[in-house]
Image (cartoon, rainbow, N blue to C red; front, top):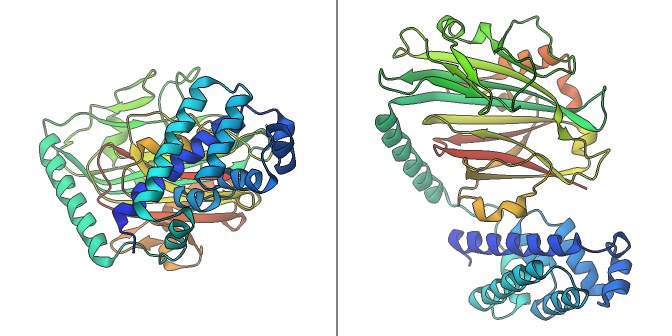
Length: 405
């Protein structure tokens, strides 16, 4: 039986393979991007043509890629035929390296490609045992405590929610509404100033965060970043000291008694940052939260409009927070080398279920209600995804990806 570590290696190998296949296919003429078209243009048999396309278009993770792709001989033929068509040399070199890793993986974990596929398809759905879950959580807890003590700052509960809907003003974009709430923030007297990033760089005319009240509306197709006054400590509003336009960062250096716990909740509207997969060639989009302070608990919710969700598959991962990922430009397999061996669980949530309102010790249903009121949208028009992570890794980025077909 394959271990958790084995599955991580196999997943990365499959994602690497998917990435190089996708890069090669992007160099094909449009007429060669179907099963018959690829077979005719490249001179590959239709069966392998179908397997190559399935590995790119029907896989949800690297393990799927290994199961769907042709065997080593079929992949070798595919790469050789791409080289004969004078595809860019650097892409051929990358493909051969990925193919070599694929071949080594098959020899290491199965006597043949067929046996490895059998091992992967026979794996139980839940690959982590309860004991392993507990060990990982304890390791993250120790990391949280060490960083909290080292840098003198922490957050008890980080809740973020994102709402993705088609823009009425410009259907080529998705409109993103977001809420980020940090509760029981603690800063020592020597800690950094408290800060909050937002998404746009150098927004014209931006002078600072708005004050957003319960009856405020932010759905006017303009960029908004505001402080939700009813869900933030009073000293936060008065503690705002400026912003860094190049870093897209709000700075709160004047928070009185910042060594006492305080709350901070922010609301955003991004009307023109994410391409609409229904009206463009965009194949992926994502939402993400970076862990800027040592944090005890993270809950992340994404509400995807139902008509968008119908053409999307979802994936999740934990990545380095140092890399900026352009929205709609990179898919999961294209950053396979930056993902940590941390696989948070993602679930679809019934909006009437208890977990849609809170988890033990923390309530957040009122915050999603608040965001939907501000956006003037109806929750029932959306599918909800939720990720719950105790002690998320400090200085990492938790990302939920949507691959669009």
